[in-house]
Length: 224
Image (cartoon, rainbow, N blue to C red; front, top):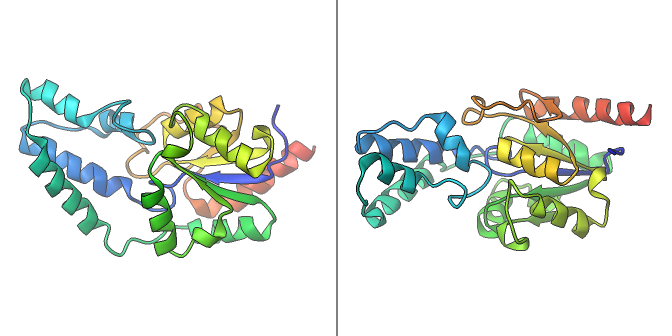
């Protein structure tokens, strides 16, 4: 049973910073260089999780029917990603939504399948790290999304019931993790994940600008 939210738990990649598009573009170039397509619907299998769940490397080798020497390709792909992320800022509406959550008295967390180095580093770079009470990342729990472990770890660290958490996600794997943790959720699809079916989500909105109003409606519904 859901209760009035006391904590807001944000995903990071593709929600707070648009990191997923440059990553997809770099992988798409690798596939095209080998004569194959990489539809977004296929690539989304690894969004919000990792390559253990679905690997573009394994997929491309299956398509080509031969092993690929990845070391030089990995270096070029990483250089492309870093170049395209130079100067990246928080996504539309995120700073305002985070500030509103803080001022409204919510506990605030970031929960990501990525590393602390990546997540904390980016939050520090865009000036939002101090706005969150906790960051929970891939090494903080036995399993990453779509398993519920990271979200349950966040609730434990905040010392609240999982049902008192509201998750904000951009990926289907993230929504699956929130649902498995017994947490209410809001999906904000981005240009990588907008092709996905988010019918599993409790709420779907167009941008973080809509978050405060949606959260207020959720609070009112639970109070009534």
